[in-house]
Length: 345
Image 1 (cartoon, helix red, strand yellow):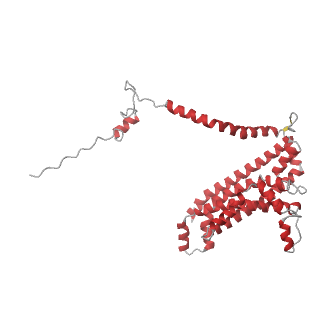
Image 2 (spheres, one colour):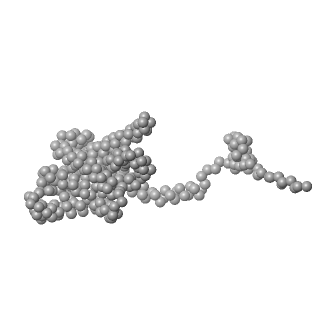
Image 3 (cartoon, one colour):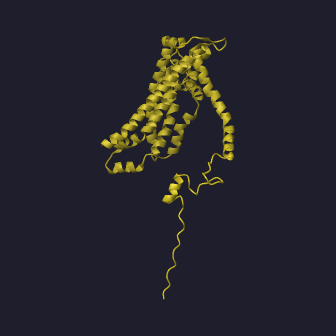
């Protein structure tokens, strides 16, 4: 007679996984939860003493950094805001003047010239740095020989400080003993004033900034190009897209977020340019390179009108805030519009 198979024994189900278990858990009567000695209600599991000790230890470690951040950022910002409503020479006691500093800025022709020079510098530097960075990034994204060396050479100027750049180009562009005029002389071109010519000085500063700032854009665009989905490029090529169509319809849309970031970053840097101007021209010649930040420094630490300089600094801070918020709004609108356009197609 054949033997019958042994019956299978199933384990008891988890009380919390059954319907009754879930109902008891919802009513707070789940036997799996810890209860007090009387068994009347579940115990409240609060933060253990060990957890509270870890939190206290963490705050003890980060408190010095918090104090330093507050002391070097928040407190000076509030102090300078109060200073902008006062007449202060950093020596004698200050005097409250209200909005007089801001009214004086509106009528100051030197401040208006500084604003014009800053805007001209920004309009020239920002699009040129982004455009050159994109072009070089596309070129260096190809498989060419010594591409790593080329990428390094384009990024090295960005690492050099603006002070060192100013000293270097002050020697190169010296109107009498500089290398630039020596090369122009051998080419049969008359010597140029460069940084000593009011008509050329600001343009030369833009060129120096492009020499250093373009490398940052190149690196950012290269990183973004590495993240472009190869399947999209391959699909576009199978559909017969040429190099221009690949760039316009595949590559550039993928680089839009990076381009928006660089636009904001380079604009903020251009509006705050100071050290290069201070090292090379000191606002000259004839005030042709006086930008807003140099104007602020000149008023606060050269003319000893700290309240007036603080007011100019907050005008610049307001402009930077408007630029940042405006670009973020434009970016958010474009992001919302993109799915709608894709659905329409």
